[in-house]
Image (cartoon, rainbow, N blue to C red; front, side, top):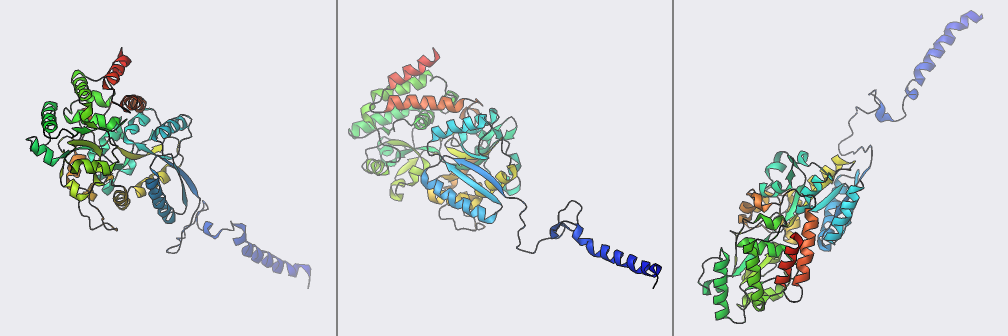
Length: 430
């Protein structure tokens, strides 16, 4: 056969080889077939998870150890549901130390993606440029289930800067039997009425205490003063005490021998005092009230009409301004603060949930509601806060609070030194 006769055969062989080699000239990854950008248009089989990239996010909290262990459990459940997101939790049980560290980290652009902030810190952090807005997380059912009284204090400059996790308001509780002996059908609503009731109780029960104050608890002092005059915006703004407040503290100094000094968490001591008709009133966080026995709670009267700034003693999740994993952070917050997880937190800690739907039996919950918070709390927390119940958006407000708290601790440990405390507050202004 002449060479010319081989030409068609050779050309045909080359064309066939070229056709066979075409599939191997593309990316060896089968998921890249079908789209010019290398991404697959083939849907994974049901139940098959295709992970393009593992993302790590960091979360800083300041919680008691028991609550941190619970959060770790919730976080493990989250990572099982979303294995492409790894979440590193860090807990600093010291609230003051945590604040100082997080401020420094935020200033240096090294803050964790998510911080669990005291509610009173959220606006100051936002004013200082430390946070990203959280509005995009509040949509649909999530938004409709929020309570305005908890959201308003987290807003500034037209944006929402945090997502509520829990709230643990201070309440004033009264001995029902001693109120009756003092001739009252309800808690006194002004300081004069309280002084008259206290005098009557001392006359009938010389060994009784007219109130319990714990050393160093500034929140307790604020709630007690506001109970008799809630229109006192100077209290939350850490401004000097007015004449009325000074007069009240001076009277309390004179009555020091009739003031007990138990810690709020001293449930046994409070129980003995109330049951023995030896304590007229106490100012305690809600979770401590729930730790009292049901029998004792039935004998106490909670002053529902004078609950001041209930949002303040609570926590909200916020996203750091320097986070590079905003979508993953928002997903984590949304999952951790869903109704089931908030119910779990309430069942274990007694701190009130931030979701309105949990204040009545909710058959749609996947988990049974072991406890249902009192329905009247929903009315309190839904109500929008008055201007005097929220501090001004002062970037240094947390530092001012900490400073006054340290002052109060100094002058209230051991014996009360209320006069010296008042003079020190005046000296800061002079």
